[in-house]
Image 1 (cartoon, one colour):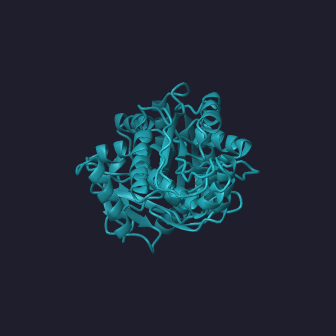
Image 2: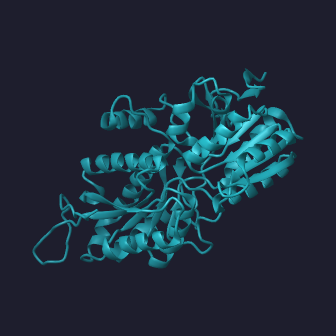
Image 3: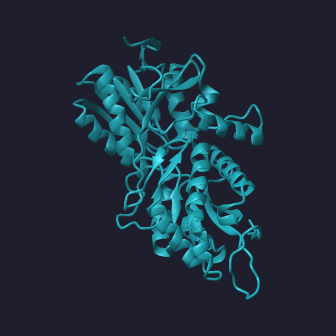
Length: 411
């Protein structure tokens, strides 16, 4: 995409004496391929936020522009390096948003520390995404150990200690991070790990893994797969085996919260989707005034039949937060004419001190290592709709416990 600098509205000193203009501000976006449904959900959120920000005059009166750079679905380090370098050195981006996948987010987070450019990560949550000596990457979502701990606290609350748990996860860095976190949470909740399986299409046949899971007779099945296509394959394998599902099936975000999975499948007779419990930052209850305003704006742009999901809202909120942080001291940074390095360092300091309110995560404040620490929610698909089932203070109802594919409320 050709970078267009939009010049409008800002009356601040710039390069030429006697002239007062405002440079357009380029925000780089690392995003998945066009065929990736999660990337499309994110793009919708970014574009909606961009329109809203610029209609309101932009941060400090300066209009924003977005510069998209592709990441590969596999998170190729070479592709991410090329994309980040282009955004920093060719496009003069003041900040970076993204990426879509966990591997790409991890590589990019390391690179932005090298290039000294702030990066805001909307939804990736793996343990190793933020570098150990991180100063420039900021993550809005909770880390995966917060989700696994919350999930098994809920299981213990509903089913008691001593439950047998099987973990099935994608054979990737993110998948292994999630699985390790889940094992720790299972141990803390005084439960028994009775199966630990990774899957990739090039590895063990999925049908055999399903047979092994069935043989373990778990009370709880914990799933992690990052892409909707993977989720479809896994769910189909359980369908084909006519598998007897455990009391609870917990799906850790990733591909499971893509709208192409939830709302193409939900509402069917298939309990594999209908009774999934999702470890996710979901807070899209239309009863909330903030959520209602977001959904109204989304449908005004994309049509009355369109529906926004977690990835759309996460991308939308991340750009709003970035613009908010950028606008706080934009005038100070612009005093030095055309100094993009000053803009970046000013924004980095603003993010370190950021205090904001977000659609999905409530209050946002970053630790010194760039980690936000929001409360997590567990959501279940009940009668075709997502409802919060944990924690008690936020829940609409208690989880539906699926006994042999027939849902019934636990009293």
